[in-house]
Amino acid sequence: MILNLLEEKGNLSRLELTEQVSLGKTLSRITLIRDINRLLQTGLVSSSGKGRATHYHLPNKNPLLNYFDIEAYFGKDPE
Image 1: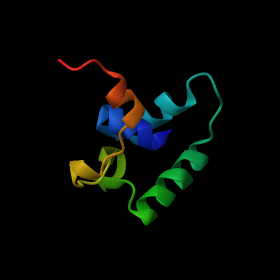
Image 2 (image 1 turned 60 degrees about the horizontal axis):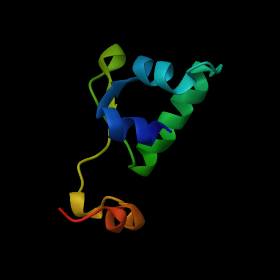
Image 3 (image 1 turned 60 degrees about the vertical axis):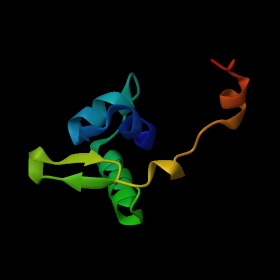
């Protein structure tokens, strides 16, 4: 879910991630921090800034490597 939010929104702070991820559910701060740290360690997420100014985003990668749904792609009418 964190990866989907970062792909959709681009750049989010921890507070913004908490608000978006929790949406009606209780989510502890430490759980979110643990999840973000795991994503940082594996290289799936990058961060910029320090302290409260830290923002998280997806690392720059080749757009040709992005996943796309081939069924949806070929299901569209040609223009």
